[in-house]
Length: 247
Image (cartoon, rainbow, N blue to C red; front, side):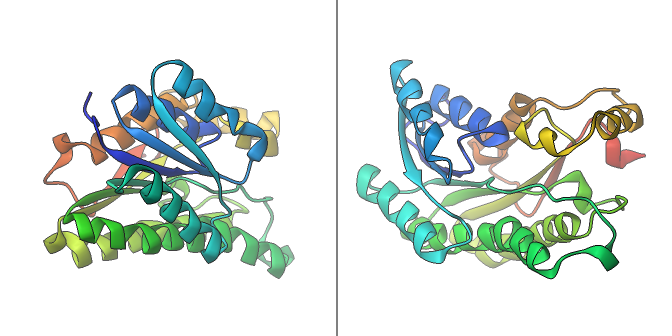
């Protein structure tokens, strides 16, 4: 029960890595607040409760500052505090070269994958400052660290998230708030529907472990970083990619 009595907000918590993190946190004793646009999956909170956990679903569009602010207010109004933030909400991109990239689509990817992370941090941190402590994990990607053909918007957004994390880490270290990021490799998640079978197989072939990651494997890395086991770790980007970026 490493997170007993902790209150954790997880954006994008209704599917993929976010959902796996919500379940793991609940099993570790946290009160979990799932923020997601997918209201059709709000039953996840009920399922967590059925297993003895504590969870709340709040509709949230991370690209909208009002929606993010409401998420944090709802979490603190319900549970009285906010200890942990996992900024996991994001969308994949339609791959293509920069000269064919639609500017509106570029902006949409950045609005959700980068600005959404910033807004989640912006509205969570004041509550952590009141506590005098807190832990944040922002979701990066292996694509923040290597060049991927025909990936402009997503790679740019995730690289910015990693450096945003470093900047926040040194900004809030004295106030007791730790800020880290996790950079997963290609992971078994709903986002895979945007990839062809050939693209998925190519990723597997290039990975030293010759497989995709599992959401639970990434969630365990997130759990470590928000737990007291990582009490002297801040500003770190933890690669959970099967060795992809080590090559």
